[in-house]
Image 1 (cartoon, rainbow, N blue to C red):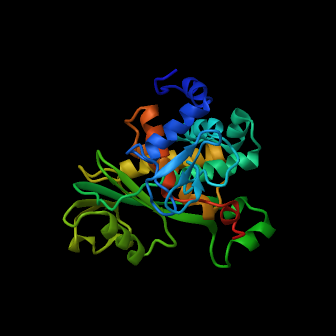
Image 2: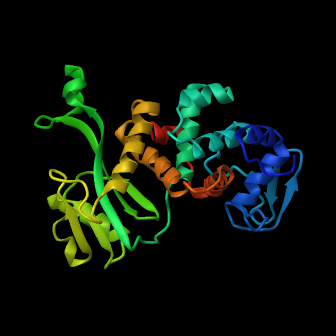
Image 3: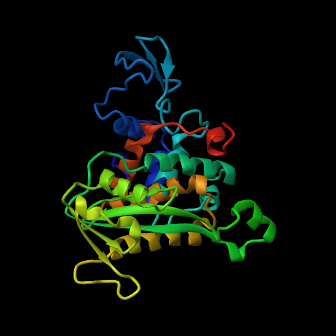
Length: 307
């Protein structure tokens, strides 16, 4: 099969061929078609066909397609890595490490590590700001104190607070893209600082009546809706952001069951990727995810807080 896959079944068959899988990664990682040494950037190299690696003529070192990517230092081949990317990039409500473990024949611990690496490639990048009509809102993710064991509640929740919940702020351009970020608090400085960082001045910004948004009219055409009385006031509402929060929580509560605060941003990135590429085909989403594998390497020690 020479055509690129369009379904999961075709993807599994396609990537089972080591040469096709390698060519797929090379095409997306180096769009020019010429692999560049990740250490010195040299384009002159020789290819060792028996080992599927290159030897740089500049620094004289060898490198594979995995070096400098989320796949680095992984003994798992592309025949499992690429179907894993396909599964998470095209999931509607996320996918659990247990499901990936059963599907790919790896341990649950390995599947969990693989999924977190893929979420790095799904991070929404770019400095382009949103404009036009923009909604800003925040939500809280986590467990409620009343459902916790007393000992766990004392360990996890500081005295004087009620919930072990993590705030997340998001902004969305109606009919366009969305950005979201885990924040340490929901103060005016934090929330308005993010709005100014993400949204072009002069845009119409719609929020709820939280005091944290008071004063935005200095930079934007700011209007708010009082959720105690109504959810929509003419064209003013935050329903687009509310819908995204429901999708995020459905993925977390229905699929992941529990998400630690230190890992939450990666789960947010995963759902942002799904939202911002919602109109693409499965193959197009796969291409975008694999095209971003060079964004960084995540070690297991760093993932588990031991580094």
